[in-house]
Image (cartoon, rainbow, N blue to C red; front, side, top):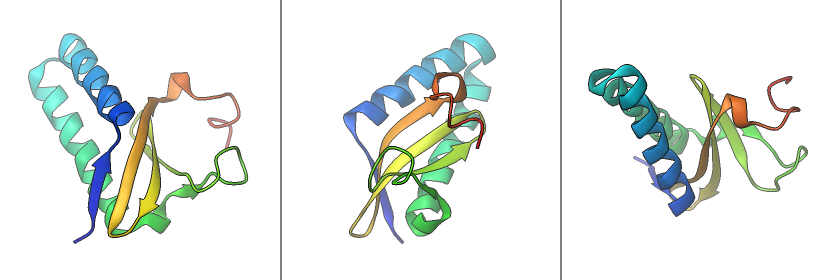
Length: 99
């Protein structure tokens, strides 16, 4: 099984998502949402070609994949992926939601 890791920035994104989700929706919903995100990370690690190659858009060697109302950004590494950011759709540059 391939592995995923998170950069410090991605870890901070996840902490923000967790805090917001707990405040707005409660502990149970937050736990389910974060679990779904971790499942998505693992699926991307197992099948990294699933994501959209962002090279032509703005980031060489970066891939993206939607996860509910967030977008996961990651790079490939030997044995899996490194998640470099998890960004809410409202924070995405204007060109991304229009794809």
